[in-house]
Image 1: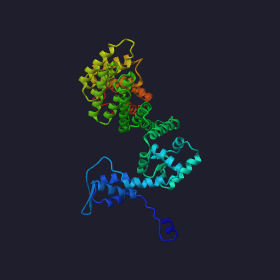
Image 2 (image 1 turned 90 degrees about the vertical axis):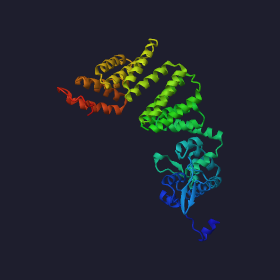
Image 3 (image 1 turned 45 degrees about the horizontal axis):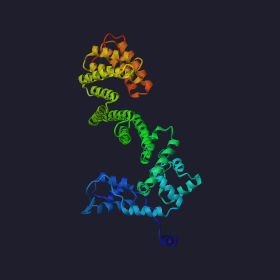
Image 4 (image 1 turned 180 degrees about the vertical axis):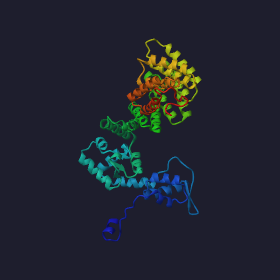
Length: 450
């Protein structure tokens, strides 16, 4: 009927664009900016979705019209998807050809943003069939071309479309498709660490915990490398959750070690986020894991991390006590146990504590012992940290040439491992030391980098 009227010039088809937040705010006069932003994010500015969402909110008592202005009701975690919106999306889906319906199902499992290579690999049809189905979905405004290459090739015109399609996929079929997506992404992006989180998400949804565990661990490392602490913490939370599923009784030494490392890594991230209570909760969980399993290596790991954070919290006397406990436990192990790295770290922490307690001679003794112990077994990270603090001790003792030598050694070690944050600090200290070489005195009351 509409097409006939248009053909006779009696009707005009209007294509409504998406509403901006300002336009939506006019509809929702009186509501808070935060609530308007949530509705805009939920609806994407789609006029029909926005109107029906406001209607559903009003019916649910979450939004009331009082004297011509909207008043918010109970705050909820997620806004409802109105039945009218679901029905409208369902009508659009029902008009699709069989190939287009099949393709959009695969697309919904992949996610909001779509890469053509992944889509075609999972759908397993030839390029011509894929492009024909995509053209139909574009014409129906269910998909649209993505804004740029970095964002993917295509995306759902609205996230509610993706959610409705996804919800309609039977669970067994959904798990199968998630696994196919993960395997396709493995093949296509084997050398790209930035997609580890997406691969992990698909393996997780496919109920493949071992594979998901591997990729969540890789994703946490990548997020940490990019200083994305919040994201790294979320990935490590998934790692620990999967550990609970795979080894709930902590029977496997391999899983215990991985669980301990995940707790230690998350404690570090929470420290960097200044979430001290959460950091201490992870350290307590590491302690409990070591105690419950009577695992001496976990106990050593827990003690070593405790020492480091005690020093960083300026609790130097307690750090020395715990470091000596850790050394005593390490000494009690068989002589062939690889404890050189750990002993070097604990001696360096003792030296660190003495230095900040104003005891440079005791600090010098501990740090030189750390260097001797770690000369053959310690890696560049540990050697760099020992050399760095040893350089400070020599500076405060007036041994400027020796201090410069230590800071240059630390600089080389940190360059070797790509720790450019520490490389920068080492460079600042080297620059501050150079004027002191040959000078009778230098200001030892200030840190080197002043």
